[in-house]
Length: 483
Image 1 (spheres, one colour):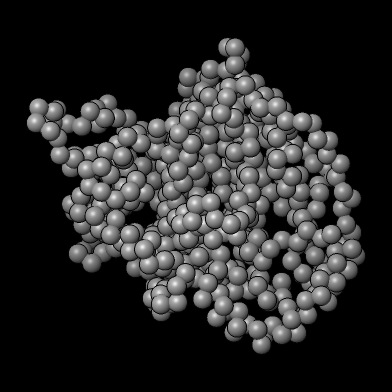
Image 2 (image 1 turned 60 degrees about the vertical axis):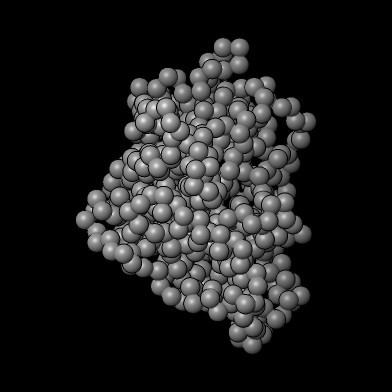
């Protein structure tokens, strides 16, 4: 049976070019304390990933395009699968600093994945200070479907130092289909669904109406969401991407700081994180000598989990458009404004599902997917200035090949025209930010990382202290200014 890519996954492939690599990823830092005092070996990670590939069968498959683009591409087994091609060894000059690692990560995430092979890579980076190791993973959007597929970076993590044992599952690849086989299957699919070709024009308008209806969870909000969709986001340097090259910066913070701010001012930890990023954006704009008036805002696309444990149809995640109050000088008021905006979205169900925009081409012939995906990319550029993602992570220590995970930084992709994306995850009492930036548009991304630290401290300074308590928040002392 043909395993054909979904319309959304195919759109990500068609939209990709050298200037817009369509992969997501992350950086995991492992401590030097191996099991029984063992030193780290590159082969440890190779062997671990090999033992876990049965959990992610897609990672042994590659994409084959149908001749003539008669149908969407298909997944096929890679008969020449070479694990060491995907798990690569690299290093920074000893003693490698976090800044040097960030620079290397920026270069790695700038490179598109090899489409002739399975669409993922893991880099094992050695040479970091203190004997630490970094694992940098890249996975194409087409590999990460809406059903919550497990990523290889998650599959290799364990809650115990001793890696969990999995039964051996020998892999025997299915023979790769020929071009003739792909064409025959494509014609068969089109025969069973003739409306995709014959009625494309007649159904196009209907499909658009259906998609826009799905954009909102209640019919009463359709007009408001449509207005946001066609109304341009404010003009900003953040929509001035100049190249496909990337810069990357990391920020570490203390989860207790964010909880203390939430207790003092209300809202949620997610609200505090958004407010911190808002404060950093304000400082960054002012440092660029940008005019910040009382009406200046930065519009963010913020994916939020709205239905934990929902059915596996992608409905558990919605993307909200939030106007961040970068003009507000008071950090506490900034937090209240963000909380009010997020609360209004969550209560009313006003959300813009990113997948819905791509699915405008669901009934169209696959040859139109390239144009449709590029139109969706242009539309997203009009809708928002910056992407902000926040995913709560496990609050227990994790291990990879017996080595403790000290930190995990997410890597967000940049959509066409976007110059900045900020991702955040919490893990074992820490909050970890990954900042992705266009290399030419935002050369000072390291300064933006420092401004995130400063925004946290600014909010901490607003917490009222009881009589007799120290004037400064205890967690502010000794905070590192480097990533």
